[in-house]
Amino acid sequence: TTRVLTGITTTGTPHLGNYVGAIRPAIEASRQPGAESFFFLADYHALIKCDDPARIARSRLEIAATFLAAGLDTERVVFYRQSDIPEIPELNWLLTCVTAKGLMNRAHAYKASTDANEAAGEESDQGVTMGLFCYPVLMAADILMFNAHQVPVGKDQVQHIEMARDIAQRFNHLFGAGRELFVLPEARVDEEIALLPGLDGRKMSKSYDNTIPLFAGGAKGLKEAIAKVVTDSRLPGEAKDPDSNALLTLFSAFASAEDTAAFRAELIAGLGWGEAKQRLFERIESQIGPMRARYEALIANPAEIEAALQAGAAKARAIAAPFLAELRAAVGLRSFT
Ligand code: TYM
Image 1 (tube, protein in one colour):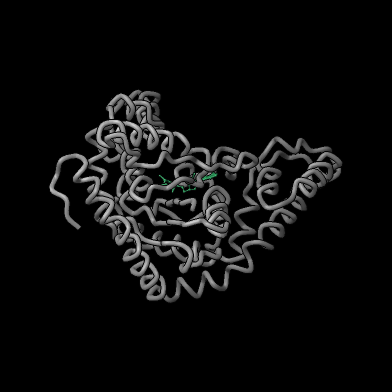
Image 2 (image 1 turned 45 degrees about the vertical axis):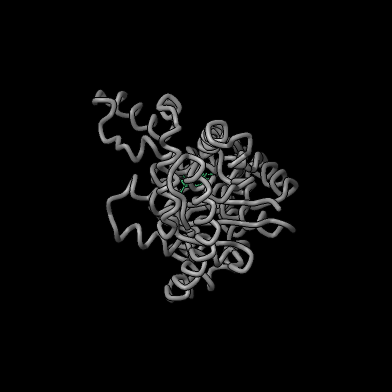
């Protein structure tokens, strides 16, 4: 069997980047014969960036509904809330004790903050919590707890998975007594669309406020968001540079190579930006539209989601608890389940 695992931080409304980078490939991977999958709502990670409890709760509901509407089959996938699995923070501690500070010093997640502080002439550690600094260790605990082989993610998360491998190797070396306690996980990134651009052409990200939400606002909301993709002022009939903005890349994430090439040719031949946006909308809507009714029904009935998550947590803990007992024994703590 191949174990596939991925998580999404519950701080915002799910957007096209989350869908293309993680949700869609994860669900596809979970359908492979022999796959055993673990998908979760990373709400401990959410606390790193967000001190608004209502926002975390809302985001958790939206992300859960998105996974289910996108076709996650709770019979095949262990689907849970990170914070329902107390074995994860416990493993986090065991890993923290073998993780070199120097490894964390190189993590993009916190360096982005210190770099921004320095650029703004502020003290470099301003606003950097220990949660942010140690975030890759918690992520390693998520992955190693279930001995995942494959982790479908966008390119921005690859460094964290490499760190999880390093931490796993170190732990195996120290405590494995010749055995591989942890599987060394691998990132699974779709090379064609490793990072989906947002409205302004930078990486689509909650922190840049340039996202296209998947379901929020319905089909109308999707269309309005697409209308905000930044383009130049060339008129219909004028040749366009298809690589001057995010439209073509967004299109390619929902289209075959042939259809993308045809769209590119039409832009060069003078297709208007307005018409191009309409085509992009129709293309995305053809995939997202059929999921929308299910999404809305789930959001309106949180009890169904809650039941699914609690059942998922029970399955996850049945795996995590005995494995943690083994790990506790390996490091010299009392083991119990
Ligand atoms: P998060 O919540 O920032 O993003 C969730 C997933 O969406 C992907 N993604 C993108 N992919 C392509 N283009 C984009 N513009 C884009 N924006 C986001 C991310 O790469 C990610 O796969 N730390 C993680 C959550 C996490 C996790 C884990 C993931 C916690 N533990 C264990 C995998 C395994 C995060 O903050 O992702």
